[in-house]
Amino acid sequence: MTKKMTLRAVALAAAACACAGTAGSALAQSSVTIYGIVDTGVVYTTNANANGNSVFKMPSLTGSFPSRIGFKGTEDLGGGLQAMFVLESGFAPDTGSMGQGNRIFGRQSYVGLKGDWGQIMLGRQVNMTYLSQLKTDVMGPNIFAIGSIDAYLPNARSDNAIGYLGSFSGFTVGATYSFGRDTSATGGPAATNCAGEVAGNSKACRQVTGLLGYDGKGWGVTSSYDILYGNTGASGGLTSSSNSDQRITLNGYFMIGDVKLGGGVVDRRTRAAANVNTDSDLYYLGVSYPLSVALVLDAQVSRLSVKNSPNDVTLSVARLTYNLSKRTALYTSLGYIKNGGTAAVAIDAGGTVGAGKNQLGVMSGIRHTF
Image (cartoon, rainbow, N blue to C red; front, side, top):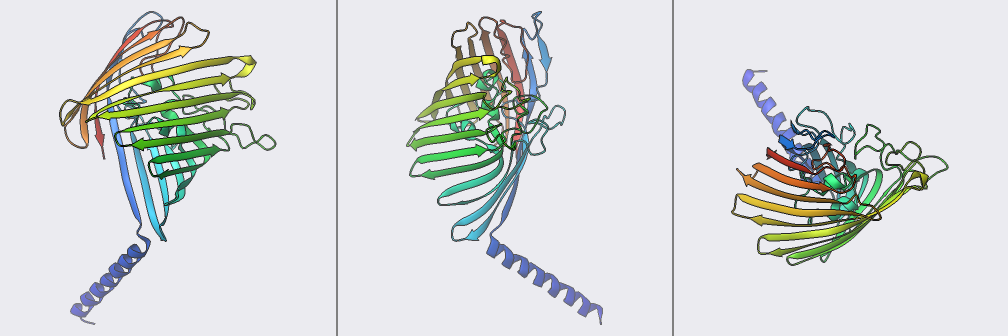
């Protein structure tokens, strides 16, 4: 066989493989996307301990958004039906360590099916409490935000969960059911040691969430319900399957041109061990105002009202973001928190504060998305 014939055979084989691959792609219509956020900076807070000392640091949990890397994909199965998956890992850019209780894919890890009727998901996923505030909380998972007061809100995910989400003529409905809401025991708001799936005790670590929302032209409203149960060894005082932590939210937003007004309330009732029962309401109201194409000002006031207790908390936050491009932004956040009674709610997510002390915080950072 001549060299010329050999080269021709190789070319024909390569073309055949390419055609086969193209035909397979045309039938399956598969796609996989890699995406992520890297967001970090430097934060300064006052009264970071009982002595009233201040601290400079690089935060681990979040800046303007928590850092992550994710993989998502779909496959067209025909007849309007698609298979899908999401694998999303959170990490701390200051140290490179994993987030969400040291999970590999702690932000999301699910597979499912979707069509015109909605989508069904199986695995670790954000639940309806998380989704209910996406359009109304203008600060989102910012380092100074309502997540500082209630750390569960930006970490509202469920292990071992079956989920449904659908949208129909402006209405959105959704629900999740978890057989064991949290398998991690490493501590923190995303790791509360309640694996569940216990023989003879189906209520152990179970969680149910639901959502109903409507979006009109320039406005929207959502409401969600969330109840989670405990078991032996679970954190937050939920050391029995008869203990529970319930949240009901009502949220809304309204657009005035390019300006968004968003607010809501989170009613929380905890029934913990030793008959420790707490009732509280968390209110928030914010505005997002684009000063120019590149410059955006966000501001929010939130207040935690604890029933029959002096430990109320008020948080005021402002954030200025300058978009260098569609993917890269610089930002500065300024916040002040007032702790009533003996409350010790730190202004920064994952931070510390002296009991009953007020706290000022400033953070400047950079965010890049891909």
